[in-house]
Image 1: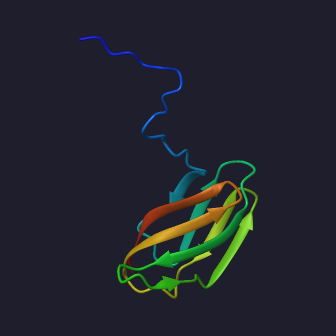
Image 2: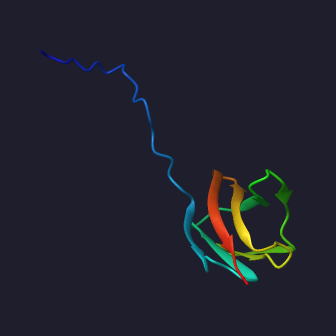
Length: 98
């Protein structure tokens, strides 16, 4: 059996390249740091709990490629961190633990 791949065939899946270098500490108790790839600027940040409730962090500051996020207003648990930048959207699982 011979398989022919045509140039016009598109791949079924393309890997999404993340604009995040690192997120730490995880688990976090009060301040979370997100390191973006050079030149990225965040537009919006929110946490989503497992009930689907959207929660804004207390304070978010970007200094160069680093976003400092105060999560003191979040209860212990697992959240989905949704970060929107000029490069796209990423979602990361974060554990709040005090």
